Amino acid sequence: QVQLVESGGGLVQAGGSLRLSCAASGRSFGSYIMGWFRQAPGKEREFVATISRSGTVTDYANSVKGRFTISRDNAKNTVYLQMDSLKPEDTAVYYCAVSRDFYYDVTSDVRAYNYWGQGTQVTVSS
Image (cartoon, rainbow, N blue to C red; front, side, top):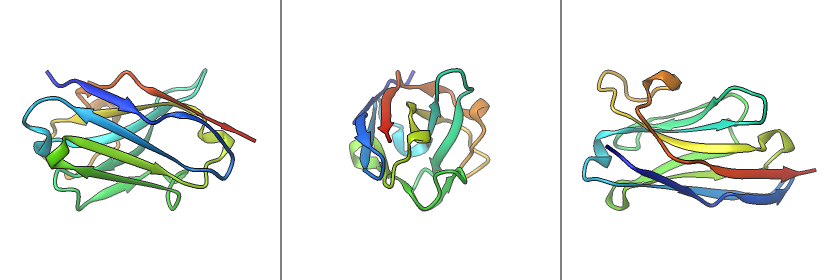
């Protein structure tokens, strides 16, 4: 069982920045693919970004590419999401997640993720 705790959400004006953090429990953090997803009211949960176990491979949704950056610190069992140039359409609850998949380096498939945090609200005002 892996427990994930997100932090860093809040209210920001359009064009602003936020940095989300996700701390994981346990001693196997470096063996997990990590991902960030988001869910807006009335919409399905959608992929935002993913990072490989070593941090050398990343992938992003087209809607955030060039504005968001995912990173991880395996020594601190923490994954980050730096969000710049925020837009009102980025408003959502943001979740971090663990994938124990051993076949791929990264994955955007929500079904591949085994553990989820409780989420942190990000609200971008226009």
